[in-house]
Image (cartoon, rainbow, N blue to C red; front, top):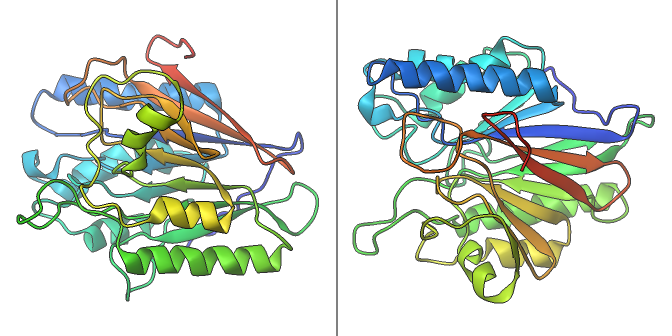
Length: 299
């Protein structure tokens, strides 16, 4: 269980660095992994975040002999620091040789890891809620939701897994509890690996910034998580990974749908490697976000 408490700093800001699609493959083109790890260290040093979030595909489990050792290397920039960190899994983290629970057990060794296994009665490993405390008062000022977006859909449907109804009920329940305790919805962010179908819809109906270099690889089934966010009124932004050539931000019905920036060199994708940076402001329903890329430029 995590000892780390998330708190807005005295300037009233809270900064998150999102690494996604690291795809460590110890042994296959190891120089690329070395570059990935060095990039992550450098970004953490430059940005000095209050929280590091890994949004899935930390390792390519299929291409690795010792998945647990590779996973430990993937989170090294966080475990070597005192900075709180959170992990959610992607479709490649536990395809072969290791389960999500095995990886979760590794995370439980670190006091600065805020990840939780989550409720056993719902789909996935790593559905959890964390609040960010007010800088001066003992009360929550923001809320972060983490979802396990699973791996693959059944063969009869094809494509990627969808967020299951039991996870959506869990979210709605968590949101009600947080909202009830705080006399109204807190500003919220949600993190998952596989983008929601609305990431595709935002191209037709929303406001856009950033690049779309490939199809949105979202599930074929829309199970309604976005609608649950709209109804609950707390989530302002959703952050995903998975599609290495997409880094855009789209706003649909007042909710920002945001891609992280692919971090790992040992995988496909034309974009410069980097990380997404997110800053929350205490007492405001807003966030700023930019990309810190490998040449230190800000997008």
